[in-house]
Image (cartoon, rainbow, N blue to C red):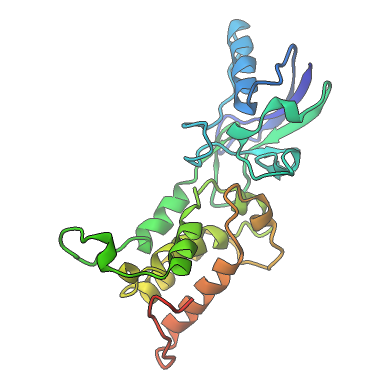
Amino acid sequence: MKIILHVWRQNGPDDEGKFVRYEVENVSTHWSFLELLDVLNNQLIEKGEEPITFEHDCREGICGCCGFMINGVAHGRQYSPEGRTTVCQLHMYKFKDGDELYLEPFRAKAFPVLKDLMVDRSAFDKIIAAGGYITVQAGNAQDANNILIPKEVANEAMNAAECIGCGACVASCKNASAMLFVSAKISHLGLLPQGQPERKRRAQRMIAKMDELGFGNCTNQYECEAVCPKGIRKDFIGRMNRDYMCSLNKEIDIKESVGAI
């Protein structure tokens, strides 16, 4: 089949950029979307033209590197209604012969375009560095059974830890909010006993860094949850907000035991 692509080409953050039209013939339904771009890039190189820049690594939907907008939706989520997906796991059997697709990078003030479809998401790293870790010196690792954690709490922590930091939530939000990402990172640590001592301080520091880097505020329209390839729920934003408010008001005495969900 033939696929028509309108790809955003931009040399760098200071370049204006524009859409460039490409046609790819003999597209196999077995290809992933990134393989489609690989084939197009080979054709461009053979013609002596500049290949399209896009970010990728594992190509298994795990690392969170790949990601751009396909017809206005992060990761082309609308083409995989039966399940969550990343661009690398979106396959061409989802498309029809002659489909016309517009590819553009994730757009947010905190995600400057490096080149073409690739953006700088180091802002996420800075947020994690501000508090997304545990500094308690616990010595050697203990046997897992020594720390009893209710199954529902462990499951919830794992649900939050599934976030791969791809940035789709930011790109989909009209305010370019990173609250779904930040809340997932705060929650997966705050739910477990090892993360309790720094729970409030972690929320305060990570949210402050998020604001400093230029991300917007959440307006509860849930575009972030709709496109998240790992299904991170908006409920974590509420948990983050509670931890943050408690960090600002020392008179509030909240129960910080593991069972407090």
